[in-house]
Length: 196
Image (cartoon, rainbow, N blue to C red; front, side):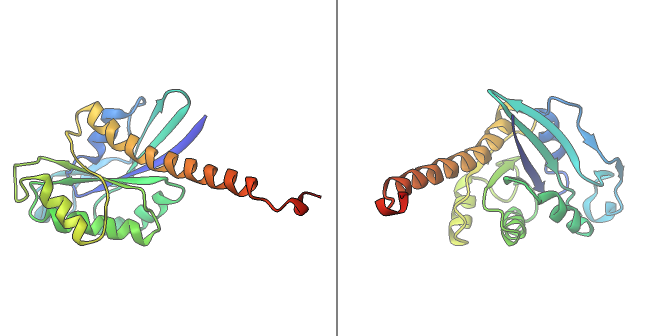
């Protein structure tokens, strides 16, 4: 069975842990939901203070390990450790937040610096805040030369969350097919005298 690790990142209360719980076939393991030390800044009484973990198996034989990272800056080392071996990142952005365009750029920059290029963005609460349509996100990412897929999602919807993780998996599978095709072409073009 193939085992892939996918990271979920995004702002506090964007829905990372909910997205993982929506898709996971096991109970979501969390390091405790603790009283949020940043309460005055976020107005969120409880926050996940560690890594959330869930797991789902997709047919025929693909196991996805889903890791949700905490948003608080003091946990940056947890993000970096969690990304080791990950095939990609799902960035969950609350589009009704104060700065959703800046937030998406912030997370893309963090993971791009770590060499992660398989990135998918899921926007929650579309139309409720400062950014009212997908075109604004697409234009913003195009200006930054970041052509990542962006989807409007409800993190409580299994099909929406599945779309996000399947898109990350598709990146990996397409790259594997391209590499396999290149290897076949190289083998076909081998110089005959090297076979002796």
